[in-house]
Length: 65
Image 1: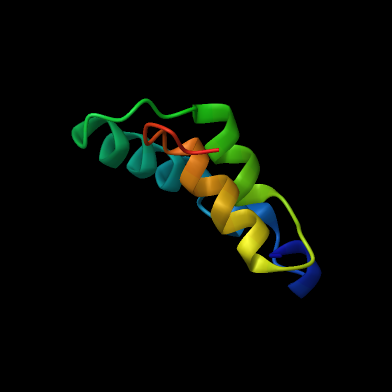
Image 2: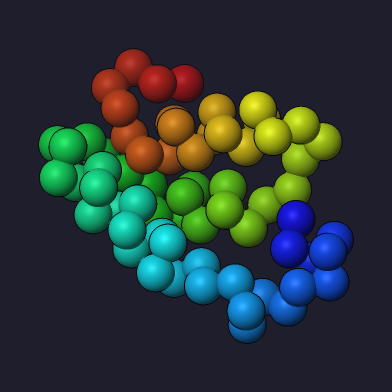
């Protein structure tokens, strides 16, 4: 999404966001998937619900698909 607004990825702090998501998930006792989190945060989709669902699954709650 940042690219579509011509915001360079250098100005989008993805690594701190990924680290925060991993820390939050681990603190909650979940099994996060770092690469999947990164992909959802840098990915594109027609509807935001697609990415938010993917992020939820990537954070690792039991039974999430």
